[in-house]
Amino acid sequence: MDYITLKLPFNADGDAARELLSTAWLFKIATHRVLGVARQQALPGSRIGWKNMFRKIAYGIIPNERYADGVITLVMGVYESCRELSIDFRGVELSDWLMFQQSSLEYPSRNTTLKPNYEFHVTTVRYNGSTGRVVVKPTIPKIYKALLDAVLFEHVKYMGRVVVTDYGVRSNQLWVRGEVHMTVPMDVYYERMARHKKNSGKLIGGVDVNTDRFNLAIIDKEGRLIDHRTFWFSEATARGFPKHSAWSIIGMRIHEMLDYAYHHGVKTLFLENPEVLGRLRLMWIKNGGRNHENYNHKVSVFRSSIIERIAMKAPLYSIETKYVNPRGTTNSKEHDETMKKHGLDKHTTSAYLTALRGLRHQ
Image 1: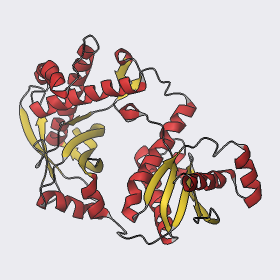
Image 2 (image 1 turned 30 degrees about the horizontal axis):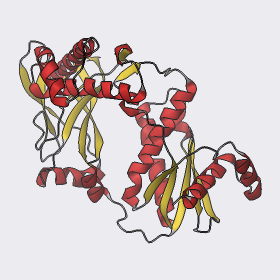
Image 3 (image 1 turned 180 degrees about the horizontal axis):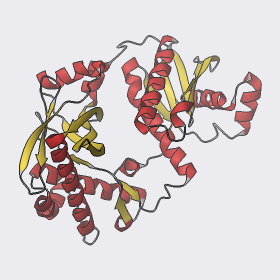
Image 4 (image 1 turned 120 degrees about the vertical axis):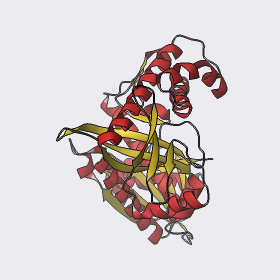
């Protein structure tokens, strides 16, 4: 089963901020400890084996079984990603994050419990090892309320995570800014969030993704170019632009493109096959054998992230997505000839060739 994670921003201060922050730091310390020990040992091949080997270590730092297992799950995920990407696990380091999570889905989530008024009751661990509960009231977009109601009243299993994005002291009072991450089954998400449940279109779309725009080309079953359009988000990639705001803008452009495609008869959308980067490209580790300061690698990660978001959102418009090999869609004799023949810019040409390649290999 596939899952999607909702990100719900919140602010907290005073005692609640203090307890959220202590839990996040204890979780990170435990993760460092488990990672350090895991680097030096022959590791088991099963999740149960990992828990048997490392739960005592994690629990000794953050004395809550669900959070201790969350630490183990995170480190095990890093290890599995290193194996997938042929990266030396012994050389990876944790990146600069503060968060805590449990490791499994359940209803209700015991450590991050959703309540009927859309607030979350979060289990916290203080530095002295005692536990408590704090109330977090995130901002809930209107479009998510039906989904959260479904989770509550249909007893949908979910997993909770709390991410601290910033903290400080103001007027002698500690404050925390963060996000509640709520992981739910994808089928529940699509059922509740669908914008168009039927699609009678017969056309084919191709998308070319770049660092400041994506281009859509629409063709018919004979391969004739019917329409094309560019969706810009250049302001989101300006130096110093807030990351969260940038992804909000990109998300809006994705919906604009999909809505345009739906209303112009697109039934199937072809995308470049994103590089398999695994969980390493998210937020939990740095370095590890890949030069993340390399511009081309950053662009690859960024473009792959956008492609994955398009593929995730397309079913909301009853548009099917498929991947094609991008080789030759950007730099090739066919690309140059097509660009001249149709009077297109190079990015729209790439989108057109992506659609054609998908049509030929259906």
